[in-house]
Image (cartoon, rainbow, N blue to C red; front, side):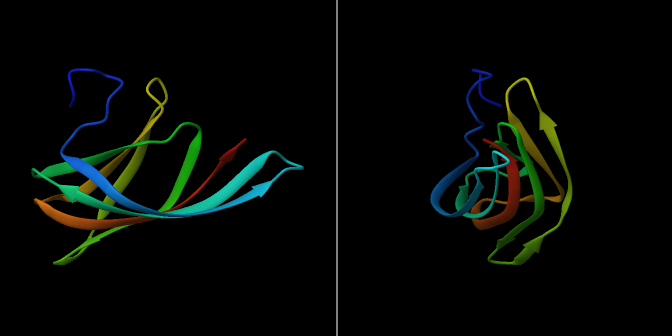
Length: 105
């Protein structure tokens, strides 16, 4: 974890985002999906993402050796983050994250 609690850990760095977002202006909500390419520099059992007021579903992560199983998603409301827990640690390399999300505008 970074010494600054407002910074994300540096062991997983994004390099590319593919974002889809659908707004519902009547209900002031949105839904969407994102694909994120990340480079992992050291082994880890969790990934931490900025996720202010988001509900994340259908989280998938895959790498050169196949899919990595997600054991759970928890939220840190104080720092507006999602903590993705993995069944096994991910090793250094490149990965693709994909998930669906929704939230309020």
